[in-house]
Image 1 (cartoon, rainbow, N blue to C red):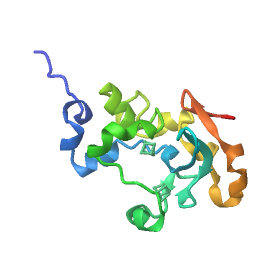
Image 2: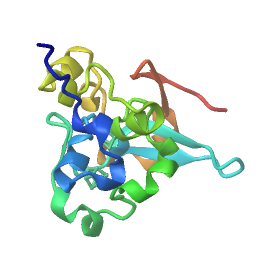
Image 3: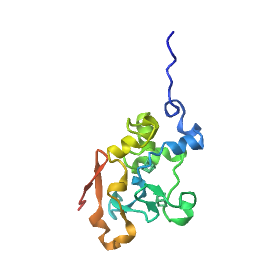
Image 4: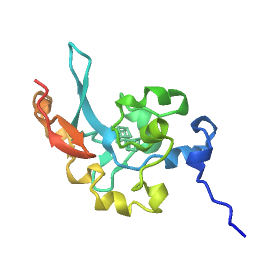
Length: 159
Ligand code: SF4
Ligand code: SF4
């Protein structure tokens, strides 16, 4: 007898029909969306920096005020399935963005692996390069702009 192949929920359930728990579990915990961004005044292009929101526990890559984040930090967003078509501002490794664009999760994703072991091994979260925003003067933030190459940060000068 041939066993029925198990398909995980993210391949079979449209994002809009996922439970809250399923939706939240798509986040791989990389912390990249908690890095500060700078926008070009003329082109509106958005650049990520390696400067993290002050509420990010950098070592653990966890928000210190997750349940109250929207009231504690201006500009913090709650990602919802309704907005998924606008997720192109998220890093190209983000679980939500990858699933929306490809229909599957990357092979290192905690849901695929069963833990964050592979993410950590590949250095895909920000804990090894993020710097608390409060430790750098805002006038120097431009020097902290990065671009990601294969999920890893490289210094970048957009000028
Ligand atoms: S970039 Fe995406 S996967 Fe990474 S922490 Fe933010 S929401 Fe989660
Ligand atoms: S408040 Fe929390 S979730 Fe929002 S940007 Fe800061 S660290 Fe990230």
